[in-house]
Image (cartoon, rainbow, N blue to C red; front, side):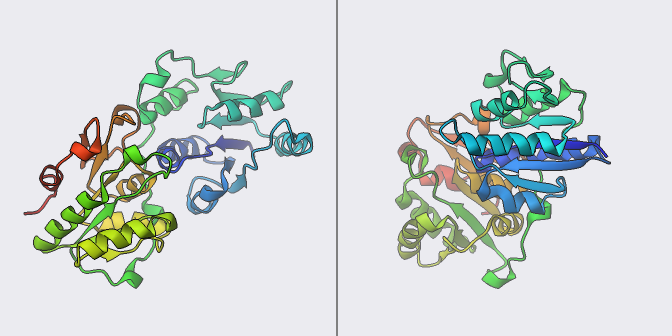
Length: 305
């Protein structure tokens, strides 16, 4: 049995978008043992995926930790991988290729000396999904599906939500506040959603519980689930919601990959042409500053009156 390694370390949105390529790699190597090397936050999601037989957690060894680097090198060499698909294509993942030289396995990525380099000079100017399709095409994998995480959906019955609800994702990376639509705008949108006969459901991580409380206090009909949802819950919520509205952040990718129709809000801080979630019912709204984006304009994208 041949052994294959897939490297995808993060972040969350990027991990979700790599699941289409992961499905294609599994289909291409149906009888192989496939290992995923990923970051700790995504290990559970990787174990739930039907594409991998094993999941390894990247401990990010550095030159300052030579013993840890030696252990990683020994583990990679000892696994006997015939081919590596580096879907991270970062300096770190390319360094792991150098760790295995000489005698490195076949390698799809951007590492210098790789057997199957992704040499497209425009690779950094195209969407993540197109870039990874192009990378896999260079090694003979032509059919790459749109990412779907239906397999990850949790049973959301424990939340006791009404039949009609809209998912709101007001958070994002704490060090990137410019990527967030103002909380007051989300609160105004929540009130409008309630007036139209649906429940606004606010989600986010534990760091965003204060944001959820602020919105739910300003919009009495809102249901605050911040700090209460797993990745699988967000996939399940996205599949059940009438619509999802959120910033350029990982949970929106999870919801869309779960089947959600969605409106995604972008500022000048990121480019939807490179990173936006893909789906048949995704609307992108972009402003230089998200503070300039009006509530009525966002509400006009809701698929109900």
